[in-house]
Amino acid sequence: MCSVFQRDAKGQYLFDLICHHLNLLEKDYFGIRYVDPDKQRHWLEFSKSIAKQMKSQPPFTMCLRVKFYPPDPVSLKEEITRYLVFLQVKRDLYHGRLLCKTSDAALLAAYILQAEIGDYDPGKHPEGYSSKFQFFPKHSEKLERRIAEIHKTELIGQTPETSELNFLQKAQTLETYGVDPHPCKDVSRNPAFLAFTPFGFTVLQGNRRIHFLTWKIILTYFAPTPEACKHLWKCGVENQAFYKLEKSSQVRTVSSSNLFFKGSRFRYSGKVAKEVMEQSAKIKRDPPEIHSAHSTPVHSVSHGDSFMSSRGQMDDGSEASVSAVISDETYSPSDSVLPTPVAEHGMEMPLARHLNGAPCSIDEEKESGSMREGQAESGPSRRALRKVRSKPSPSSDVEELNKFILSVLRLFLVTIGLLFALLLLLIMLTESDLDIAFLRDIRKTPEFQQFHFEYFCPLRQWFACKLRWMGGFLVSK
Image (tube, rainbow, N blue to C red; front, top):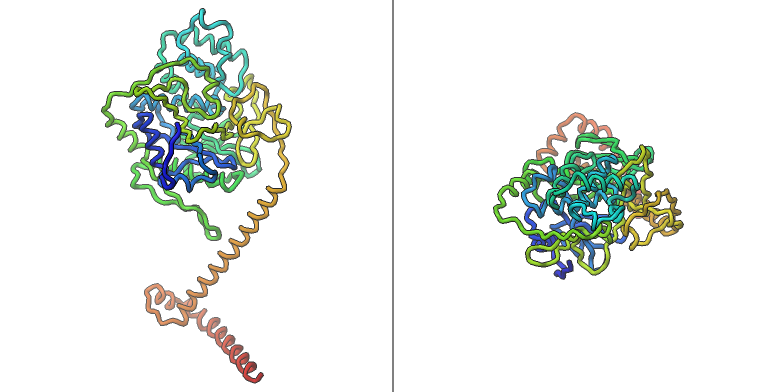
């Protein structure tokens, strides 16, 4: 989908345009994601200008994504919404975010296969037909045979809608349903992923969920870059507001600043989950028609960053390309994070490494440790992944030095500002005749009176004596 908009158009305009194109009413679960030139992911803020949020030059490339996963996707009011959530979760499975056991993986893949090609037909589906579909980053031939077995024997007669519904029912029971991983390191500098889910805060390490936390527990983790840290913080603010609050009127502006450093201010501007569900219950229209055309292998769906499969022909006859690409360029954000959803024979797969603060999967054939942008999500290889150690470039060293200098200057300026503010307050307390309540209360305290007579007055007399001496010295000259 290509769109031309005014330079001062806000994100809400683009989002409403996409939802209208898709005939989507339960739109509050979705958002628009884009990736800046440094491979850092962002959610488009609807209240701000689109052009001002972009670091790149137009045309801009963005994609529609599920931003807030429904806690119970089966309870969504309209099939079009469930279908879009199904496509997102299927994509999560393909990119290794939806971790699961081999048995669960086989069942989920079989549901996808049934939704894509329908009932098993010996005339159309020769031996090994399931191997043409890429359901996961990597899997074994044994798993492929198990997928085909379930498809042949257990799912006969299921319509695409039923298979998608069963897929969602199974996916929502998994620990990593709704996970959007953020790469980081713990206090011991071990790699990990932090993720917000509809049910809490999750920490992933070694392809396993090691922590499931409530919002009140505090842990220390380090993001790879300041931009990644800010993105993680914003996601946390939005997820907490969406899932925890009763009403959007309870949302408050949150600041990340502290005593010494100027932080960011951010306010979630959408509805909360309870309001979204109440609004969805009031939908009375006839459901929009979705014409099924399941003939495309699953792996072709993930080329570039396409969001929808071939089942995207809407009732108005237009192509419902939910990728929301606002340019003709291929969108390759390098956001394939975990290498596999299946732990075959109890073996753990190594986590993908991070290059320049962005999560990515590194294939064995990439000997240089770098990855071209167009190859970021063209489809993970079946070969085992290995860790690649990248050497810092001189430009990155200069950037780190500049950031350090800026931090020191900021600390110095903040300190000077605090000292000036304290000096101004001291002058107001001791030298001015302002009769303000809070100043009067401070002046009456024993501590202030002792400070005034024992320290301030002698210090003032000393400065006055020095000034008179300097004045006399200058006059004598």
